[in-house]
Length: 413
Ligand SMILES: [Zn+2]
Ligand SMILES: [Zn+2]
Image 1 (cartoon, rainbow, N blue to C red):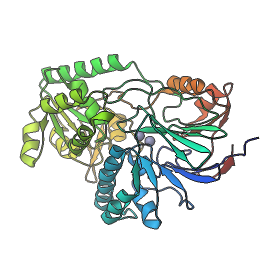
Image 2 (cartoon, rainbow, N blue to C red; image 1 turned 135 degrees about the vertical axis):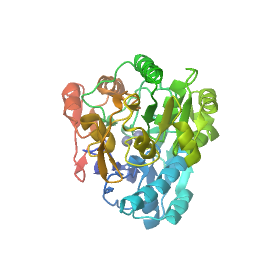
Image 3 (cartoon, helix red, strand yellow; image 1 turned 120 degrees about the vertical axis):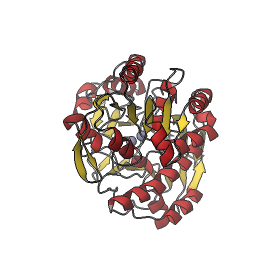
Image 4 (cartoon, protein in one colour; image 1 turned 90 degrees about the horizontal axis):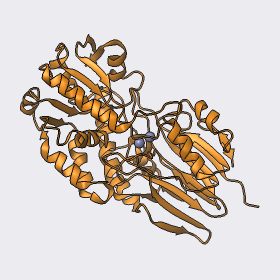
């Protein structure tokens, strides 16, 4: 008889954001991710008890945003890939800046971010390490963004924690595959929603840009700096378009290219970066207005260079905003797609540009989640990273026992 596993989501159970999960396994305490929700105001997971090992799935802030705070409280040992370490570092620094601009604060300093670097013990996908006599920890690529990991614990039960994952190949990373396990912790961002066919969507995206350019407009593509903007630049490579690139995504591209082993094709990203014009100054921003396409952050249009471009182009009916990410409620991109309006530094104004959405998601869609879960052959499935888990419960209830714990709720497996 194996002993039960004690588990608790400190955040990220019934929400997208704030991911932090505690698991007691073979008498050791593991913490999976320690993120934040970078909203207005930002929110944070519950504080954890002392843990033996922290595992970081990937660089997005909703999984890594509060690591510097955690390391400032007490010494930590953290396993993640090198690139995840660097990317989270950059995003954490940026989150302090953004919060200050918005009049909020983040409970750590740049110094804490630097100190936290010493807690990282880098690991590689496709490898394993032993933890004591009775536990093995295996690292699998998650197919979500470069350097992203899924974690498998092997002892008297096998446990898989997916983090964010994707099963189809994107330009940046190859999709992942199911891992046999007894207990599956699976993200459910896209519960109830399926993606459109990716190559078809990309063709429609390029066609739309050509249409905008032919009528004399500019296509503005707001994109998350980490992974989404690079994915789009590769999709636009070799299309004969004049593409300009602005925002923190430039720095992130450089980091990706420093760790080519995490990329599906470093050659493609290098080539895409060579083809684009980088914006470094206000003068560059003026020149970019004559481009065919401007790819820039922030993805949800609440800050960053996108605002200055939109100030100039908002009344140009020939131009178009092509959204490429999920529009969280309360953000400018949601306001734009629903009402054709945007807030510029506190003032809401009408936008006359055409607005369209293209699904460049890096998460598995509903049917892909279901097939992945079935492929893992688990007895129990715990769903997290979702504000709408019911459709998945419905689809998986004949496959395994499905749990949907709330944040803060302690449960056993
Ligand atoms: Zn993510
Ligand atoms: Zn996430």
